[in-house]
Image 1 (tube, rainbow, N blue to C red):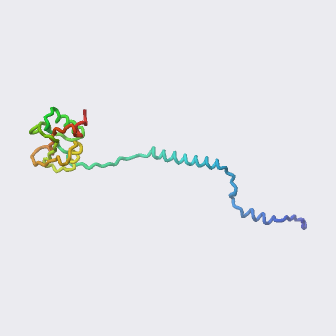
Image 2 (image 1 turned 180 degrees about the horizontal axis):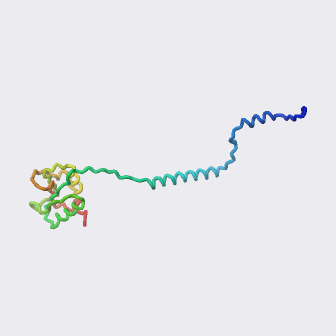
Image 3 (image 1 turned 180 degrees about the vertical axis):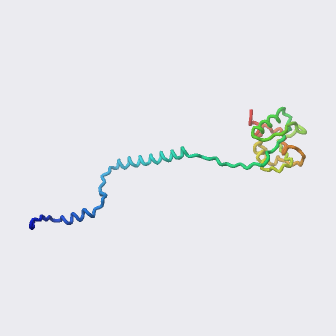
Length: 171
């Protein structure tokens, strides 16, 4: 149909209005499922690499704080089992564990069946508990004796010396 030199076709005004209202994104993307899988694998690998790198270069700080007594525990070691050199061996092992041994020698007799610890009135209960744990004796093997001494405690080695934790510390 032609009217005075103007060509009119059906539906042209509707087609133009439809083009203007369409969104910029096409509805049909034509992406293959294999492409989506490849992108997902690449993304997953990137996440793994970043997390591994973060853990690899992460600095760890050991912030353990140990509360210690104001003065180290002064220990006197005595041989109460009669085995030659046992007081020297235990003294060396205690020194290796950073204890301050101020004397060693023989006990009043050699018939001590169990190793005992005598608190000479030092009032350092936490240090004594730690010493008991390190030596390998029970708290009920600690006795209190008020005595004038340069030592805070006296460790008397009994016939059970081979069962002590401190015994096999050094060769």
